[in-house]
Image (cartoon, rainbow, N blue to C red; front, side, top):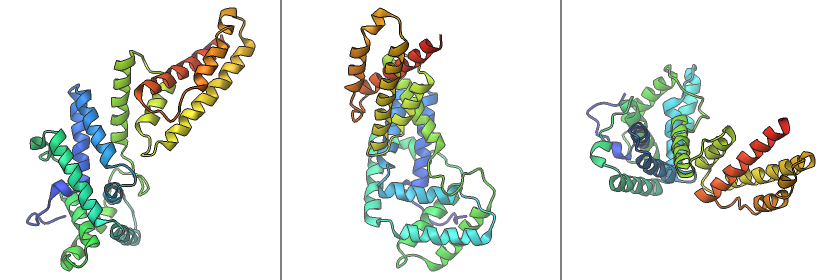
Length: 285
């Protein structure tokens, strides 16, 4: 891939930085440093969130790295589409966002060993980033280099690799790590063994989008489902003491705010899910 003599600023390579962040999260989780891992997760979620230029570039970069096709013609079409997509990026905003990311990494993490973390396929990553930079700035790019690098990435797209389709734009590794950190955090804070449904809530919480609208709808659904289950259970319940608690419990659930995503409120929703599981078990007995 990229010629060894070609200078490359790996601190501004979106793919390399992302991989180094993932490895730092994994390293800290293995070491039992969940607080440290949470700090790195926060950096990833803050700087690679939807709507940012950095996120747009990462999606394009990730597609070129992971996509595998069997047709030379399709590979050529992908390069054309990737080139057009790169040109749509706001270069100024992208530069500013990368500077902020580097500043936070330097401030939050030990940058002395962070940037030395080795990344597999480094030369391919360097080639892709340089090529995207050249596509965005054709006036200052080296035409011969662009032609050479496009040919190299064309071959890369045809090379066998363990990947998803070009539409796979999320990293399963970071998703699992984020959920793992959130699960440990909630387990330690609330001393609870999470049920499958509670784990589902943790996953939705950890991977919610920047606006939180989808997660809000999810929590609203939890409220509605819980009220229905309580009403159904009330019809068959023969315990007088439990009967006296139905109204107050229903009122408490209806008062929950699906727009509040703080840990304390999430804990309340987790309690509601556990209650629903217990109601289901009670009906089955």
